[in-house]
Image (tube, rainbow, N blue to C red; front, side):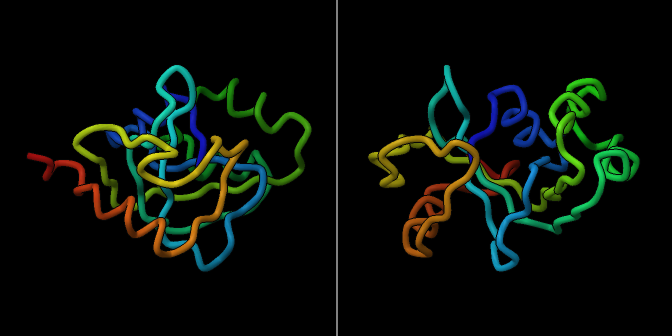
Length: 137
């Protein structure tokens, strides 16, 4: 999943506990790799999907404002033309020792616009290069 660096960092630090999207992920998705967009341009972590909530932007804001990790104005600007949105609740967070190159480490040739589904083998390989945040030595 492509995420702007400020929000990717907030997820890894635990300040952002929900990622907002206009469409939900497939219901069988259990993990999300976090690709930090330019200028970082690398996979900087991952998180487990603790839940997904699809509703109106106002309902999402009421539910998640305290853990949104995004200012109210930016949240509503993002959903300005959308009647519905999805909050993807961040569960356990993982990070590699060093950011992973998208092509060399994950096998993806170009960054996804929003998100891209990976084969289980590709996802497992990337996750194996990570440790739970707080346990990185």
